[in-house]
Length: 493
Image (cartoon, rainbow, N blue to C red; front, side, top):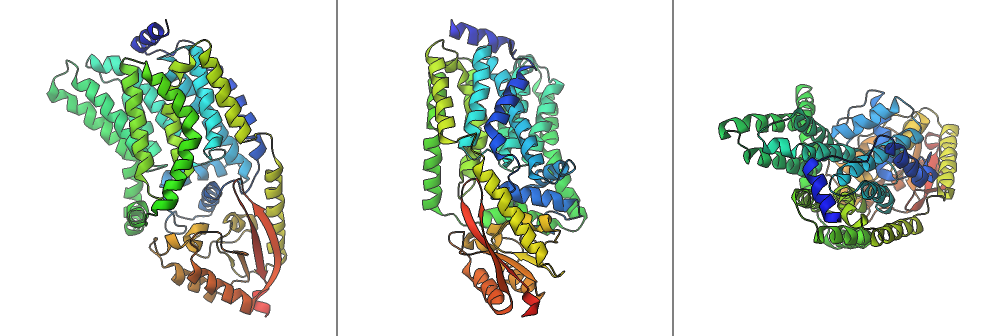
């Protein structure tokens, strides 16, 4: 009976019972799972940095020129737009929650097309539950671009019959535009975007449409998908920043060293965490037939390619894989008894390993940053602030400009990042110290492994000779904690 329902829905491409009102259900669930983190100024080093750059763009900062990183421009522009709402971290955290809920709703619509309405809703819930398991509790990049890819997948899959009849509906062009936006948020989205484009093209090639005409919509789709990235690259080239942009987007990533052991360990840990969801998805695929199975299998393969393409794997890199995996669980979750048991098990596992009601660390983080900001303001004599291997949001919290484009903590503190930008890490450190910063913030011991000791030793020599330590404050984030030293009154000694 289930397989008859799957087949029938796969032919129609409709989401039989998933309605806009169900979005409210996903939003309430997403809020419940994330509310304990709302307002945390140091939830994760990555998103804290993205928010810092977004705020700095309001002051005229240009990504890669005034503040350097390897993430695409679209990500920083997104945080720039969020900063119009508020500079408080709760702004991006609430927007990320809305994105997560919307993605779950799209997953439910898509999964309902090859299963039942109830199973589709459960698949969307599985996505929300596993986000927190894989460090997606805040505003990591996939939280945002997963929505664009999921919506593009829904549009392409819904158009599959029209494509096979030789039609090129506008919805496919819209899907390519969404996929193109996703690529401007994270480069590895190109693999999922390519899969969707190739799937649509393959369906059209199998249609009665003459081959001489097929390439027109195909080339148009490719142009639409590439347009956002090409427009951004064109602006940097026109402004004379092409070399810096190209290095940030491509050369720096290609030159980054690969460390097999820690990467393998992180990958294995992620695999263990994903295992319950992988089991349910595999059980779904085992007795699933038809076009929908081929589509989701290809999509999962594309997401896996994007996952393994980036060296030095981190857990949150697997977040894009959650979208097709969660959708794939629907066929198994549609089973009357075992499906309900599986969903209950998934929910229990997720909640037990990440307590959504524990707000203690958030309050500790809020208090720590309030204290850090107060100490810095209390000793501010107008000279530069230099944060080394510490929270970059201290610049925006205290109204200080970036003294160097290497603001992200790893770029100065991590030996793996040494000289990967277009700037010398030691050269930038010496240049900033030559400006005689009046306040320097450092960890009381190196946080990265292996640490960039030539940078840290240079900074420690400066503060010990010229400054005095005025505070030592424990500064937690959602995963770790560190004690930050504030060195001040540097020009008075």
